[in-house]
Image (tube, rainbow, N blue to C red; front, side, top):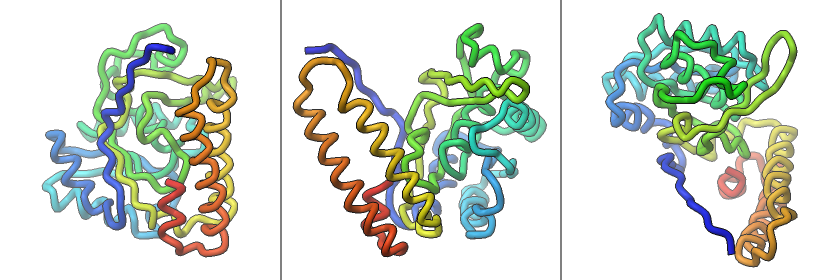
Length: 247
C-alpha cells in the first residue's frame, strides 16, 4: 500500500457549446484583460476564436490574440508572448488549442508574472516558481492532458533542448472541453490522439510498483473504450459520442 495525495483543482466544463461560457469562467477569476494564445489559423477559420472572443466581450472583458504557437513550443515564441502580455496588461492567459498551445500559455503566464527573470532558468530548475498569472484553456484536440496538469514542456531555440517544468502554480484554473470542436480534425490527428491516450495509460499500467488491481481495471476499461471509440470516430467524423469518449 502506497501513501499518496490526489487533487485536480482545475474546473472542468464539458459539453457541446461550452466555449460560450469562457467569458463567465474568466470573469469569475476577477479577470479584466485576457491574452488569447493559439496556434495557426484553424481556430480562426473554424469560427472558434470568434466565439471565444465574443464570450469574453459579452462578459465585459478585453482581449488580445497572440497566435502562431508551433508544435513543441519554442522559447523565443514564449518570450514574444510574455512581451505581448506585459504590453497588454493581461491578467489571464487563455489557451485555445491543444497541448503545445496550453504549455506555451503556462510559460507566458509565468514569464509575465516574473518579467525580471530569465524564463529558461525555471525549466533548468535554477529558479523556483513562486507566482504566475492564472491560466485557462479551451481544448480543441483529444489527449492533450496539459489542460488539467501542473506541467509544461518548452524547447530552447538554439540547442533544441526540450525540458519539462512541474509546479502547481501553472495548473490551469479552468478547462473548457467541447467534443464537437474535435469534429473538424483529420483522421490522422484522431489516430494520434488515440495512440497518445493509450501510450500514457500503458506507461502506468506496466509500472513497477507492486499490485494495483483497481487502477489496472480502470486502465483496461480506458484502453478498450479508446480503441472502440477511435474506430467509430475514424469512420463517423461527426459522431459526438465517440468524440466525447476520446476527450
